Length: 430
Ligand code: GUN
Ligand code: ZN
Image (cartoon, rainbow, N blue to C red; front, side, top):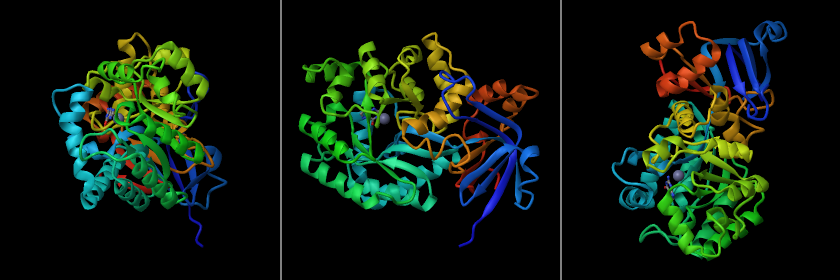
């Protein structure tokens, strides 16, 4: 077997731990080197310190700011072609735009075509890993995983459970369980893929299906639990009206064994301190989705409250309620959402949320998110002169100012290249 060793030279930046908890988490080499063997980083440091030891290794110079590949902690691939659907908050938006669109995924060939386009769009935006909603259809997971395998991307997904869904988009207790088990069996250990038990949200599953999802999770200690939580006020009212025994929205899930350290909840806009304390105690985390929250008028995530409770956080686009595939742009919106509630989100922490934070949330933080030795070499080359305005704004700017400008002004245009396991998977200028 050929062992390939290659090195990349450029400006390196990563944030391996939450700066909220560890102010020394930012790692920056203005002239750095990463050495990659068979897709894995084996060394990283200042070029001057490593050049001699790796003198025999071919070096590629990368102009731009090299950061870990972005990790989208919550996104729906079947909704990509319904992005920018006008006029409604969550529940009406689902009924009017999303459920009809998801019905079309009954056709496996159509689903496969969208899955391929979706993953290519992730790569264009510098996203190398993601926790993804498919649809209720079993094959919607197969086609996504096949497309991810072909691109060697680290993707986590799982068949959506929704036995109270609308006509034509409903499973049953038995089919939901059987298809989930078949998918777990079929895909376990393949490529860089992972499985997530995925009840759509509390309102689209019977109590029996929620309980069964909890049982499935307990039987498979390597899978995640992925759902939506407390996104929209009318949604929260409907949950309170149905789950009269539950203390709050989170408790409706908790009663069925769905709250634990492997649980990822999207949104969490409207949470009580009790729910936050329970999230912290259980080790569950939240995928913060600011562009979606603005688009659907859901509200702004309360970073101050989350930080008081030391919640684990990641960043998600929530396409198609989200309005951009770019986690760079989404990081800029997270700053604005934080500010709306008089909280501050500094650009290094925003980068953390989009990389190592999301990776930790998805339990893939050992493998990706920080470009540290031992991790897989998924990374992005950012161009801080991608547009004339970005070039002007970042001219002569320091690192924090440059990174913030990239988050506020940047998007897919600022992603010059995306590397997967040390291989170039997207190049803007080719
Ligand atoms: N809650 C239940 N389903 C959905 C969905 O598809 N998108 C969002 N944003 N929230 C949901
Ligand atoms: Zn969502």
